[in-house]
Amino acid sequence: MTSLQLGLFVAGGVLVVGVLVYNWFQERRVRRRIKEAFPGRDGLTPGAPSPAESGARLEPSFASAAIPENARRAELEASDDSGYEPPLEVHERIASEVAGDEFAPPMPLQPAASRGFAADRQAPQPDPDIECIANLQPEQPIAAGALAAGLHARLGQPLRWFGRRGPGLPWQLLKSDTAGEFTDIAACLLLANRSGAATAPLLEAFVRSVTDVAAALPAALNTPNVIGEAARAEALDRICAELDVQIGITLLKTDSALIAGTRLRGIAEASGFRLANGGRFDWIQEETGSVLYALQNYRSDPFTADTLRVSSTPGAVFLLDVPRVAEPVKVFDQMKLAAKNMAKKLDASLVDDNRRPLDDAAFAAIRDQVRSTAEALREVNIEPGSPRALALFGG
Image (cartoon, rainbow, N blue to C red; front, side, top):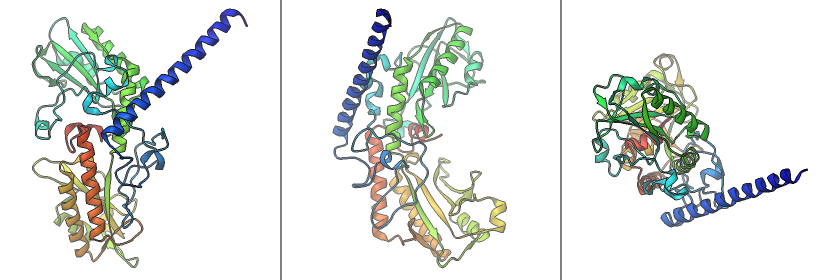
């Protein structure tokens, strides 16, 4: 081994050690900040295992009534003895806590309208807290059609393009047929959703795609730091996984009895449910068109018009996706009432996953967990049911 090879070997070892030490320091720093923000919070329920420990989606857990477990989107990595891998606080710009301004979007954009639910009724805007944003300044105003290659790109995470007609003017979500010309363009890639975090290779593909669009216009381009954005994505994914809660109430016939599919459909639709393409019934709020909760088969078979005509089932499961609905506590109360009414009409019981009846104390405990989840989401500036929540807890 020559002196040059030896020197390179030593330098490489020092670099690896330096990276490990730096990562450890940043993890400890973030963990300390999150523990200050959530004192004593290792999960939503005292004594319940964290998602990192169990490898499953965080579900309500209490002694008197366990809720049926739903599949998690990704297995989380445990980072310390508590099993809690704390992410960065969304409302303080996750990027700045990792390593400073180099990880922030390169150009300040109008914040997403997620500070309050009423504000979320505004037009869509770039959201630098949850999106990787690249900025383009065309040499001449351009029409949306000039961005066709970017508008139709498929990168594995949701991609949005915005344009504005001048500095300080509002951003407009762009489609191929959007009218007008724009002087500023923002390409926005979602950093995380239930499919997982945007990886460094995916972010590199995003930057390459935007670079190609800028070269074709032509346009000046300002792109983010890929490594920093990947770190932001992982941090955001952790906080979403920690707060990703679905509630299930099981309606079940006893003594191995079955419910005819036609009868179940008739009662479900009379209760306000509508059969959806996803193999379940949805309860949709007429004013907004939003799904508040759903009803799926107790068995693995999906509900369809054909199968309901010829089959029977021992029961069904009411599902509430807490992050995706506005005012989750009120929606839970509504779902509980619907479940009790349907159970009475079908001569069935409401039970936990061990087939133990759910009493008032169990329902009260579930309601408390719905409320605590909603509060935790708001603490990190994710309003339940808002466009930001729908983006993060979709996919």
